[in-house]
Image 1 (spheres, rainbow, N blue to C red):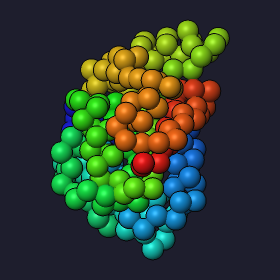
Image 2: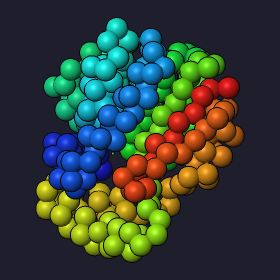
Image 3: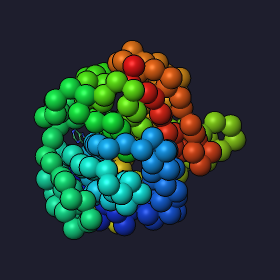
Image 4: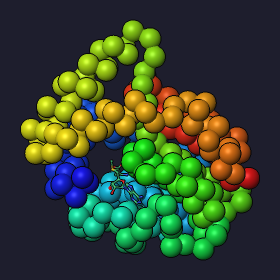
Length: 215
Ligand SMILES: C[S@@+](CC[C@H](N)C(=O)[O-])C[C@H]1O[C@@H](n2cnc3c(N)ncnc32)[C@H](O)[C@@H]1O
């Protein structure tokens, strides 16, 4: 599915999020920079847009982007991301405690086994290190019905037209509905071995950043 959308993935993101995707990534980069990490993994890096921004905002840090979709990594290769690796988030090819910070933007929701992916994040983050998971969620209150209409009816048509892959964007809405949100997600992170997990809604809750420390 991601191989199919890879060539027009970035353009579709910018249009469909009305440019808000930049502010979500900036939020992540600001938080990561405050931890002054030496080694950062951007898992499910896709076209490498977050990995590039992390490298830019964390000068001197070793930043690696990992993804299991080679066509996506080919797009990332055109960016300023020095280290890219083909890797499955469910079986990461890294030793325990390899990273000070791991970020996963819009990737965890797509992994076949959420608990297994969280266990791999916990295994490869050093004790006292941090994880940031950025993913879609649902806004609460009066915005919700309008947002659901956009998500399930407008977005698949618009994105299908932009990318030629309408099924991928029908899947997007369904996956957002079923992905754990808020405290359900922070509880799963803590079960996996993280502590002090918090959920920070962004853009009215359309997206949530989950931040936690490795215990
Ligand atoms: C929606 S894209 C997000 C890309 C990028 N992080 C961003 O913010 O634009 C989801 C990415 O997750 C990757 N992905 C899904 N399951 C994966 C897995 N098990 N291991 C590694 N990457 C995975 C896909 O290949 C895809 O590139």
